[in-house]
Amino acid sequence: MENVKANVMLDAKGLACPMPIVKTKKTMNGLEAGQVLEVQATDKGSKADLKVWAESTGHQYLGTLEEGDVLKHYLRKSSSDETIDRKHPNVIDNDELERKLETEDNIIVLDVRENAEYAFNHIPNSISIPLGELEIRFDEINKEAEIYVVCRTGSRSDLAAQKLTEKGFTKVTNVVPGMSQWSGKTTTIVK
Amino acid sequence: MTVKAMTSKEVTKKVFNKEELFIFDVRNESDFQDWKIEGENFEYFNIPYFELLDGVEEIIDKIPSDKEVLVVCAKEGSSIMVAEMLSDAGLKVSYLQGGMKAWSEHLEPVKVGELRDGGEMYQFVRVGKGCLSYMVVSNNEAAIIDATRMTDIYLEFADRIGAKITHVFDTHLHADHISGGRTIAEKTGATYWLPPKDATEVTFAYQPLEDGNDVENGHVKINIHALYSPGHTIGSTSFIVDEKFLLSGDILFIDSIGRPDLAGLAQDWVGDLRESLYKRYRELSEDLTVLPAHFMIIDELNEDGSVAEKLGTLFAKNHGLNIEDGNEFRKMVTENLPPQPNAYQEIRETNMGKMNPDLEKQREMEIGPNRCAVR
Image (cartoon, rainbow over all chains, first blue to last red; front, side, top):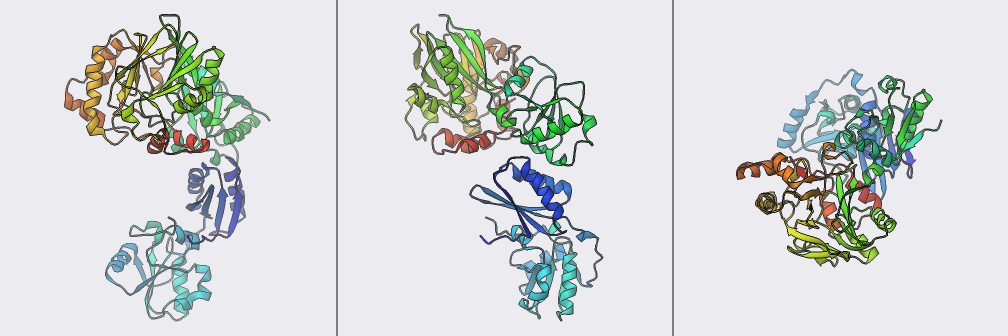
């Protein structure tokens, strides 16, 4: 299993309820919007509770890895992704991308969400380059290919599509809304 | 500020006495919906503790100041936090000591009757989970039936009344709770009896319990007569004790009957279940007091907290014993079944000796209601 990356790690091992969530809440306050927190806990009840807590507070619960007795929970701090005006002109919706993936071979799906978001749920064969790393990693992508950029809601992918266009990519399309509503095939690195 | 702990025993007393109690359950909503402390005059309010981290101001008007309030969570930590907040806000509240974990494990012994030689029949009510187990005591010898994994409680009880445990029975291979039968037998040297048809895969030695087996307990010949009554499992066996009590296992309950599907063979076992309930039980005396291995709803408890009813009364009132049409019966027990008990496959494997989970894992497997019946 690959490592799942997080911006901040919170050690809540050995702590009983309610402390894992009390500490998670405090730590979350110090994170920047969109950053990923890894919470390590041994309290079995922490999984269901963290998931519900995250949903009720607007944070994203990404998933949990179990390693022996340790549960590693991944959460992404709520961000104002949805409110950004999209600027990239070429856009397709999820259904259309799903159809293209079934019929065309040469297209690239570029997933610009954070590594941990990608890890728990992504389109098979998609490439992961988080938005923040695109500036230094864009040359990993074939300039001649048809590129479909996806994120959770279509905002980060819009920024990524603009950036790629600046760098001279010509066949770049933003996928909206993206993974939050994706109903096609997905895969995960988590067994 | 320190807050008062309420024990599971105290809560049990309130259940038995039908007292009022306001239960503020701070577990997450799905856990609360799935399983909670049941009491006839209990009121409920559920908000997860993690929504109260910033304080209780928003919900404080939902908590009555003129009623006894008990804050409940899974293991007690969160309920103490919330109880302290409420206490700081001026309310008088208690928390459940040990949380739902302790509630699930509490056993309350209730004497359900006397034997003809002056011996006694005790029922151990696991009120949080609806499991019932039994101790038959005669002339300083005790037999235990359908023991839970909280084995110390039986050992201490027997010790206190000066009885030696000589026989341990399971009416069938349980799917909803981990049996303490084998452990008790190992600790006391008692004989452990199991119906062989349920025990084909067990990894340990046992004494096969077969139709017509008579086991004597105590010098005064308290007769424990085994009656093969398949249907919930293929080996399910009932016991007639002292020609007075019918221990019906998971075949017949007070307000419901057993479900035949927990080993994945519902269609095969429906016929057996019908035969057991409509033929074998019909041949028994209606004066027998039925003592089942479970209760499903709190209404099944008698005034003293016991769960017991005359067989004749059940023939008259229990819906599951009054379905004339065989097809309708088949439909009822195979369709619209309640969800299966939590971790029932793992529990079965543990009871066969194939798995040896640690205590924490055992607790987790048993979380939730028993769900062994259909109504």
